[in-house]
Image 1 (cartoon, rainbow, N blue to C red):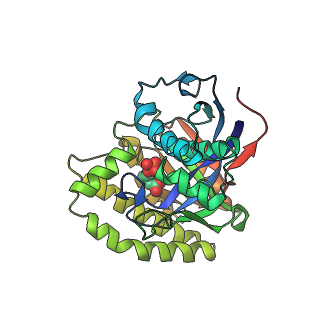
Image 2: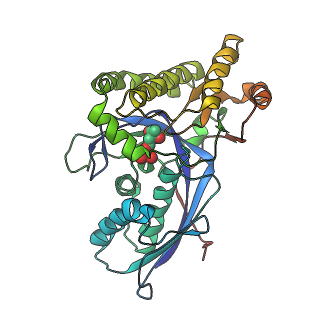
Amino acid sequence: MKATAIANANIALIKYWGKRDENLFLPQNSNISLTTDCLSVKTTVEFSSRNKKDILILNNRNYPPSSKEYKRYLKPFLDKIRKLAGTKRKIKIVSQSNFPKGAGLASSAAGFAALTAAINEALGLGLNEREMSILARQGSGSACRSIYGGFVEWRRGKKDDGSDSFALQIAPADYWPDIRMVICLTSRKEKKVSSREGMAQTVKTCPFYPCWLKTIDKDIKIAKRAIKNRDISLLGKISEENCLKMHALMITTKPPIIYWNEKTIAFIHKIRELRERGLKCYFTIDAGPQVKILCEKKDLKELIKEIKRMSGIKNVIITRPGPGVEISKSHLF
Ligand code: PMV
């Protein structure tokens, strides 16, 4: 009843921002992401009658049952799984990531994808990828995409029970081997407003939310065409536009949610300037201050040179399209 899984973070190109069902984590709009190859989370789980209570250890830190992380994020997910599996056994979870959590780097996506796959294996639930995607979605929406590698679409679905709201692979990791996503850390601080709280507030109070929804189908169509044709200019342009639209929603939420810091804004200007000079690079930003830059291998050297000249950058990580969730034989405990 012990198993380990490894999942990679995914970065949305067409964003998910807003739920139509808070309990089942059903999105208001379909969305598209790229699974990375090196922002990863490894998780070992064990269900045992020896465990008196659930134990959660993330990056060597213990989160007791009274912690917000356990109560708000983990417990509702575990309750669903225990019901599904018909077990009352408590779980021990040890999880290790190679990047900061809660800073807008999709740590919860990789975390819940790894957790879902590890539990599936440990309890012998026999879920296939689609079923795992549906389950992971209920831990953190974007986690349903990290079940798959490469380019992934999370279909909104129409049904009230969420059975048609899951991720699908658009193209595998090796379809576009020359694409790169450069992750630039502008801060290591944990964000003040979680994506879960932020998006709920946007749906409730942002006057532009209905306009956003009207534009999504077109954005998805363009992004899919760009991926199919390996067209970096088209994919970059639509990703940037869609990201700015999402941040416009955040900023016009009541009270406003502003995830950017001054370095995030400096990056936006820098990337636009580099583009004017002919470099094909495009930014995207999630619920945090970190900047992710899409480009192709041939432009990477020049781009990195320019980024390194900027002040206050904490870290730069170069990622490629990566694989979906995998089971590992080497356990963390
Ligand atoms: O699934 P969550 O609660 O981590 O929300 C993800 C929200 C964004 O990262 C901003 C967009 C996305 O599609 O990943």
